[in-house]
Amino acid sequence: MSIDVSPLIVLGLAALCAGFIDSVVGGGGLVQIPAVFSILPRETPAALFCAAKIAGLSGTSYAAWRYARRVSMPWRIIVPAALATFPFAYLGAMAVAWLPRELLRPMILVLLIVAAVYTFRHKEFGTVHQPRLSGTREWLSAATVGGALGFYEGFFGPGSGSFLIFLFIRVFGLDFLHASATAKLINAMANLAAIAYFVPHGHFLPLAAVVMAVGNITGSSIGTAMALRHGSGFVRRMFLCVVGVLIVKFAWDTF
Image 1 (cartoon, one colour):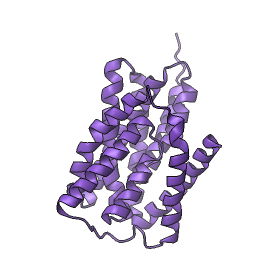
Image 2 (cartoon, rainbow, N blue to C red):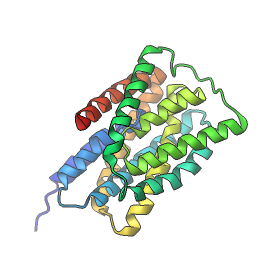
Image 3 (cartoon, rainbow, N blue to C red):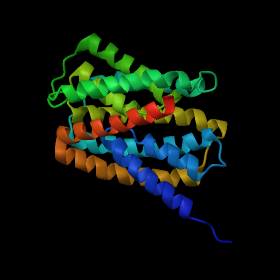
Image 4 (spheres, rainbow, N blue to C red):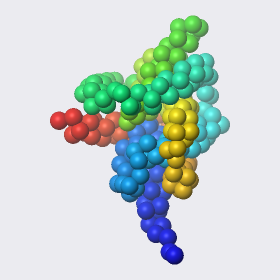
């Protein structure tokens, strides 16, 4: 009996594109989530989200490792943010069952527009790495950002990586390159939390997950190399492009 591998090839290519985008500025879900739902329409949404999360975890973990080898990682921000992200992302995945996601769309649309306008108007935003917080204030701010974005990633997801980058620059004074590197670890922790909820409940597609993970890592390798080679200016331009696409998508879905 022959096996049709064409859906797996398309999934792998979609995951490659998503990995590239995610490794630079986040937003790979714009490609990966619609692809997995259209290519595997008979599977449950939870199983499809689980496959996408496994692919995302693979790609973001690889990107984080590549960044950590070349960029000085702000661990004083990463550790509290990651510790807060995991439980809140898990709660976000649980909340899917009883909170209407549609209520979030108008709010997220407004926040995306604010982030895009602010970044576009402030040409120096994210071009200089000047950490501005320290001590308890830095720890609490990192935990707050990690917890809030972790819950959003587990509950809804689109644009979480871009929001993380914006907040790491605006709140902590990182540049685009360091903010992107930091966001990868937080995204990886959020994906791990969602997987910890989905897999024990039987929502698991191993073949699709493996194919998408390979594609995601491949795209992540390309995107990380370009970000490290071209620096914060390249990441800034990619950020504005991805946020612009997110704004169009959320406006379309909302109105």
